[in-house]
Amino acid sequence: MTDGKNETALTVRADNAALRNKTSQVFAIQRAEAGADDYVPHVSAGQVKLMAVVAGQNKRHGERNALLIKFLFDSCLRVSEALGVRPVDLQRTPDGWTVRVLGKGSKPGVVAISASIAAELQSYCYRARIGESERIFPLSRSQAFRVVTEAFDKAGIPRPSKERDHVGGVHILRHSGAIERLRLTGNPRATQSQLRHKSALMTLRYLKTLSADESLKIQQGVELW
Image 1 (tube, rainbow, N blue to C red):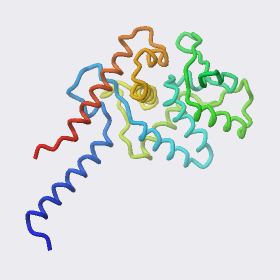
Image 2: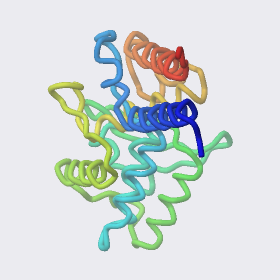
Image 3: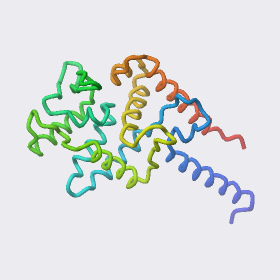
Image 4: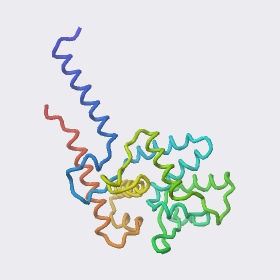
């Protein structure tokens, strides 16, 4: 048998573990409600992967839906840009893979994508018999929104609110991909190019958010009692 002191210690550790698990499921923006106004709402790479897994369970369009979610996150594209991508827009360079897009005002641009996503896109296009000049994701914006919001719900991840977080469920994948790229590279200038921000001040929000998020995680690991 354990004495009362040991039982209390076990209970405290269990409560702390439950609290950490609960906190990890909450948006960064919700954890920083009292923070700066320029804090960028985002979800983690692990949460995006979970969303892709549950989206892939759709019997008719599972592979397509999962790939769309991963592509939005990986490329940091706006939804309208991602929906316009064709197989011919995927380009392999000596340094890796890129995709050509039409940005705001039909302005052409080029962004990087990971080799694994490029391989998944090409494999999917081959099996789905998508022509070189056909759209990989022939969906409307509203259909893409449904794909992403259903993935949020099925994965049990709280959806962002435009009223509270000032971002929609699809656009937050662009934010989240940028935060993760910045986390992995530590290069704000490269992140600015990926997002095609005209002003470095816009990209600075991501750097400040990442710094605040990492600092918060450090403090959450401190046990004062």
